[in-house]
Length: 273
Image (cartoon, rainbow, N blue to C red; front, side, top):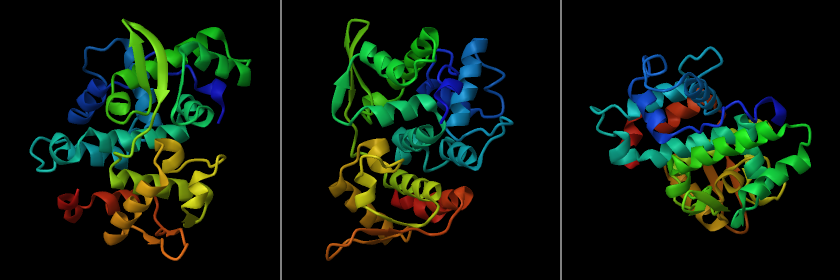
């Protein structure tokens, strides 16, 4: 992933919860009819593309259309009733690992259950990518902080908890969460497997230090809770998991992105959320 070709593309703004759900509630008009500035709109478009909700032509993806249906007020499974925003944000965070150089850097270069200052964040980027300008680095970090502060990524999911003294950020705490929706875990596993190119993976490999993706790297999920999620998902025929007698195999179906979304969000499963 070319960090210098995307680190500053969010123009210092984060994807805010208000912007995201305003878009999902008015997907055909919000990008052109809103109270945002031009740079904020450009930033929002960049975030929505990296989140997997818009394609390069700014068209709604299958995932986006699914989220739009989930948040409709007339939908009995409306997002704030049964799904909660952590489902949508969990999938978005997973996609940002693969599509956003900024989020990928954060997840790859800082350990879970660690804390660091904004200046240490900046130093880490400089030490690895000294060709990036100071302005681009600062803009990227500010986008990251704005994203986490204005979404459940900090308050509920604790992926980046900001410790503040007044308006000044003292520490960024990378804590992680086990309160992930099980279908987010399934989505993450399938995405990881597709990136690897095969459907058979193990629990153990997801905890290797150099693993590229998966729920341990992206969410900070511990192994015990992952195994509980795997059993839940197996009961619903979303995957198969062999977790007895020392085995830790996960066998996934052969599914593309659209087929996976259909599997996870088909109507008959909504009552099981």
